[in-house]
Amino acid sequence: MADENSNDCVDRMEVDVLHAQTLPDSKVPEPPCRAQAGLPFDVLSHIFLECLPDKGFPTLSTKVAPMTLGRVCSYWRDVALATHVLWAAFNVTSLYYYSSTGYLSNGRCALGLQEWIRRAGQCALSFHVSFYSTNDPGMDVVDTILLHRRRWKYAEGHLPADKWEYVVSAIAEGTPLLEHFDISTDHGYTSTIQLSSTPFLQTLMIKSTHKVLGLEACGRSLRRLSIRIANWNDGWSYLVSCPNLEIFEVESEHDSGSFRVDSDVEVLEARNLVSLRISLTTASPLLDRLHCPVLKTIYFDSCDTDSILVSFLARSSPPLESLTITAPFSSEILLDCLYHTPALKSLTVYRRPVLTHADVKALQLGPDAEKNICPGLQNINFETCVGYSNMKPMVEMVVSRWRNGGVFHCMNSEGTSAQGCQLERTLRSIRLGGCDFVEYSSYDSAYFASQPEIARCIEEGLEVSEEPPSDSDSD
Image (cartoon, rainbow, N blue to C red; front, side):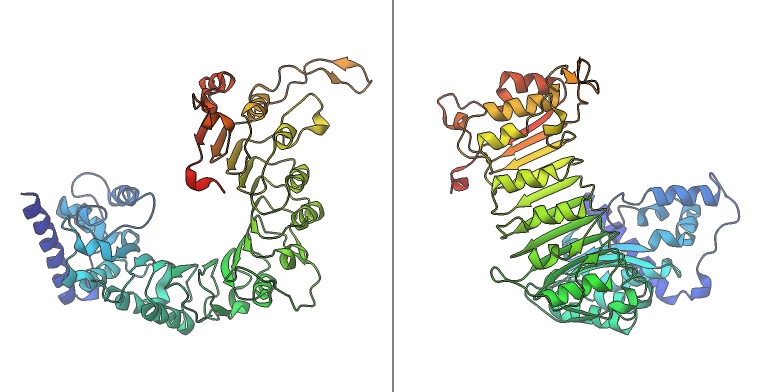
């Protein structure tokens, strides 16, 4: 019976598709002037919009909104068809065409999408389209999407190289409404992306090493740029051409070597940059010449072993709130970085640098406020970065940030002792993943969360998660 109902839904959608082929544009239903039964048009239309997915775009399925909305009664169908924005976004992937739960059959994919887009009226289009092989069923929907390039607003997904080239060509020919582009293609495939006809582009995310041209047309509108670079002259030119960037994510295609920048610009003032993600062999060419006074987030993954990050933070003095580190420099450099980021709320350290007893103890809060490192930390995440040691320093550090060490005796402005300098509790969570504590290998295999002091903190609301190291984690 379930299969019969499913096939019935598909058949009715296919009737809609065939009917749409003979229905002139002038016959598209107009908004009802009044409710024939139940709620008025504008109220019901608003409710329909609330039925769309909270995340992602609606699929071409007769089992979910918006298509299911038109199957209640003729009035609901009229309202759904007249609410063009209901149909302004869609999600199509090869996975759906193997389903028997209301998705369009292979032979009706393109026809169904044509009808869907027709129902969108003149609305700008947003879509997610994912195919990984030219032999995927339903690949002809990409040709349908290409026909409407001048209405693209938000484009994301993945396509094989041959179809991806058609998308890039469409952008070069003109996508005047495009604001977001994040369509990836086969790994290692490279080409040229021409952006001279995308004046409103705000987000550009490309995961292969493509050459980007035409940034003079959209450079000032770009707010997020995620790129993979072959040389720093390309990467630096992207930064210089996009003065209003808020998010910059950059990685290199090489595992070793260094990059050189040929530019007359000595220091680039990135006044709007709030998030910086670096995955590079060396970050010196960037950080040595970049000033980010409002930066709030850094993800630093580099082979640099010097204090380049420390000097960058000291020079920019950003109000940093989140710091993620994967780098072979010493724990002393890490602590120096933390001294320059007093407003930090989230700290993640992956594998390197390795933290010792003394390093963890340095993070403990005490009565001398001037010596406290990042007192406002809310989330701490240590991944395989704690060497073979016992849990006691970590327990003391966590308890000091959770219980604040009681009421401290502080010195007032007159130099006399005063009570009541209790720090505000800010710690919310700590994660320990793959940290090599001796307790894990003991006879009883004691866990961090089972330590009496930590157990009490957990009862009071602290979130603690831990994952002991496996054999593969040991180096």
